[in-house]
Length: 179
Image (tube, rainbow, N blue to C red; front, side, top):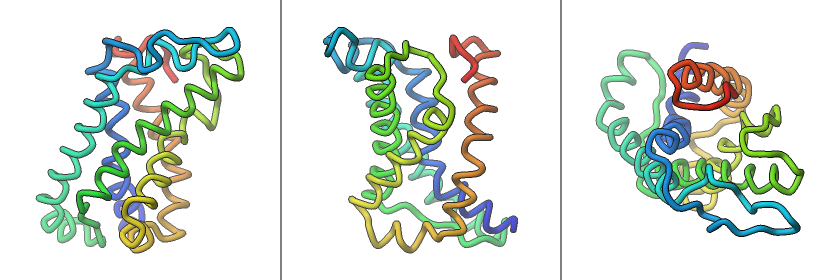
């Protein structure tokens, strides 16, 4: 069981980190340029070019680091931990950012304000984006890496990790809401 959980979480680390990096490095010009559609902002001020770029770069950097650590971590954990080819790393990191941006677009269409909670969507938007883009960019790697068992672990563990890390960021003053 430990090997299954370790393998699932390891495989998703380059997708887990980008949104956190975006919070730290964000600010600047909003992606939507302040544009509105049907009386509402397309995305809002929270989705910026700088946050998206730095978030993606953070995920790519982490994937590179994990590739270096993989042999030792595999031995230490006794788990089959993947390495990240460039397109897989890009798919996970950029896909996580695009999933979050897509959720923001959906929230604005639903009339939700920036920071408003949408349970389920808030916790899994980046996972869906990451898995979709990595499947497009690196399909063979995706099929070899994400077994049904690993996907179940990801869907169960991610909301728990998301709530815990967001609460921590809120307590540290890095986020204005704890979700």
